Image 1 (cartoon, rainbow, N blue to C red):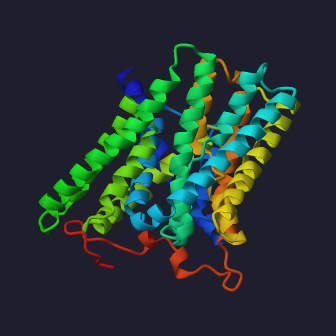
Image 2 (cartoon, rainbow, N blue to C red; image 1 turned 180 degrees about the horizontal axis):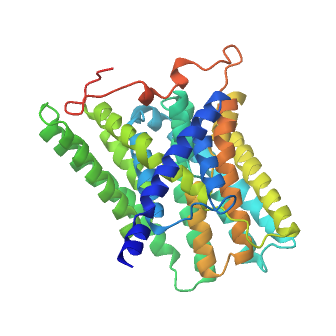
Length: 418
């Protein structure tokens, strides 16, 4: 009996090995056809999960690991972001995010109203639109990093818009929740969101000054930079969720943004890139595919799911494209920004689960929402690849290679040895 228990308790080791191997193999395959490797990781989760062979199931262990994975992914995105460029894109990001939230909100609400399997009342229909407003920029970040396009005007605009989009999504979710639940106070939630950014700004300034004072002029034991940076990232992520009701990935991105101005930012980013690429990112991307299920779906629900995906993709592209054009971006840049905001990812799942708990999302609609999340997550990097393609140089450039596959760091001082 003890042996059986022991064997069962160590199944997660086999699952981890299977995820890492399958995501890498399928990632190499998708790369062969000039698609981002993240597409292969997502497909690995779909194939091994309940939607296909049902070899892997979503567990609390994998959910927590994937959460750490997306936190580190957004943390490294913050570190590698040009703060000055992001500041210059602030106004544009606000306009793009606002229109990029309004259009999907209207589209989802109308779909729920006219569909035979939509919500039973106005609030349920509106909540379908609320689910579509959420943007998960983590997939976009990974794809842009892989293509060598992360630190550009367009990518910084996408990152800025995604942060604002996240806040707007929380505000809309709060308002809709308060209308459906009298125990939720809109004013208090909005105040907490405002206070979080004040808190992050004050703590960020203090930490930035202390970090420079303690570490900037020292070259001894560089590993402590990474540890202190990671502790700061986790604490800010925890504070965002626990005390202010803001997404933890917003806290982790801001933590990275604060550290981006330090002299050790490149070393820290390289360390976290290695951890993310080697272990956590494959788990996160595979977990999105694993969460997909097709139980209880009939013709009407499948049609609803198809329409939901179409509206999810088009509404974000159209909304963000219009916002980008209003801000002076050209047609190509507008399309790049619109495509970069397509992925819904874990943010939409969180919103959907919140709605399910409140009775605003029925169990029958949850499967189409999960499929919408998975499909938009798979489609987003493919569309990004197309949107950023240079017609004069269609073949992959050196920047499109993942540098982590070619760089080897010394384990002690962090210098490049290969």
